[in-house]
Each structure stands twice: as structure tokens, then as C-alpha cells.
Image 1: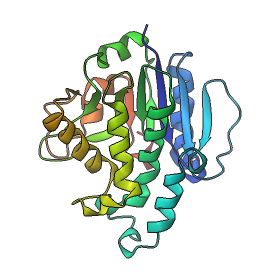
Image 2: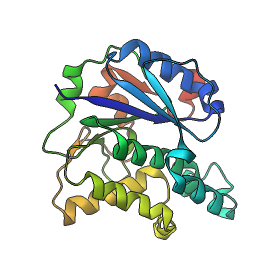
Image 3: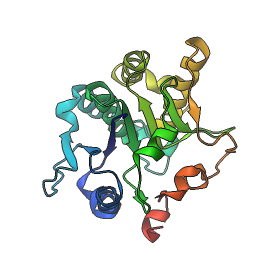
Length: 239
């Protein structure tokens, strides 16, 4: 049987806003043998549990803190509404994924956004239907726009995984990310994904090949039968 881990990232303030809903539903609805890695850049106070483990992001990934400190005062990082320029804002997520996918002994690592609510029981059979031995990524794509990266499965046994993670990290540690057209995690993810597909022949599994522009592909895909991604104002409504 394939083994899975789940990874997410949140601060204490984000936990208080919506992350607690994600965590409670994970503990209730996901298989007990699947552990959640929670990376945080501050002091996240949670009760100890066998279902999850908290990681200090800055301790786990020294490059994360250096990137944030080096770039947090840039004028282009001061407007939180300019999501497409969110290099620092979304770097916590990216470095969390990189560390988890580098250090885990699981077969597959699943990134799950901290604003995701699991409303129906997740089974190993369901996860096995999404993951693939031959393909590297299972993701939610959209034509004419960047992918929805609230849920991504990384095949840690794939030979390309070390190279992919190293290339992803280098975009941040070298500040090369600022040479791209957009700096948020989904855009950067797609740049790498498409590069590895084109030049390395890597095959990936798109769960929403019908997705267009700004379609909410998460809940309109098979994932919507199990989870709700509370993006944007949906966080305030809780659905």
C-alpha cells in the first residue's frame, strides 16, 4: 500500500481565522495513519497530537528566513492585494513544500492549503485513484491561467523529484523569481512544471483538463466531493 503525508503552512493568526477548521476536519476525516506536517514561521500554539507535527520553517529551511528578510521591505511587497507580486507572502508555502518533499519517507506528499475543509471521509483508495507511479505531479490545471495549487500530490519516488525541488528552491535563494512575470506560488509552480514537461519529458496528471481561466476547479473536480477550498471571501463565510 502506498504511503502518504500531507503538508500545509500557517501562522497563528491564520490558524485563528481558518486554519483550525482545516486541522479539525483533517483529524476527523483523513485516515489515521496519514500524518499532517504543519510548517509555521511563528510560534503556532497547538495541543500535541499523533495526527500532526509542527515544524519551525526557519529552522527547517534556512533559506526561507533569508529570502523573507532580504525582500520583505521591497516596495513591491507592501500591497497585500497585489497577489501576483506575492513573492514573500507565498514563499512560506513554497519552502514548506520543498522541505517536506525533501525530508519525507512517504511515497507521496500532498500539499493542502490551510483554508481547506474536508467534509467527507478520505480513503486510501481515493488517494490511490489520484496518485500515479509513473507521473510526478497530480494537480489542478486551467487553460489560459495559472494552476489552482490548493491541492497538489508530489510523487516522491519519481527520479525527478530532487531536481525539481532544487530548481524550485534556487528561484528563491538566488532571487531569480523576480525575473518572472508573476511571483506567486501557482505561477512559479507552472513555470517549473511546464519546463520539466517540455525539456525533461515528465508526465503529470491534470485533474481538471477542462478548466478555463478563473474556474474554481478545486470544488468542480473530483476533489469537490470530499473537500471545499475556502478561497478569498469564502474564508469569511466558511463555505
